[in-house]
Length: 54
Image (cartoon, rainbow, N blue to C red):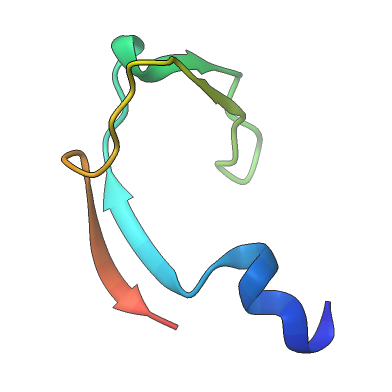
């Protein structure tokens, strides 16, 4: 990834909560990661807050 890591991972860390109306989630893996497929009506701006810039 090198110098393009911010393009792959982003430049901010956010926290928030997802609900069933936001889409379909996969099972949580051992380290807490999971897949998420958003619904067409999902709006994350109101649900997530930036807590740190990288």
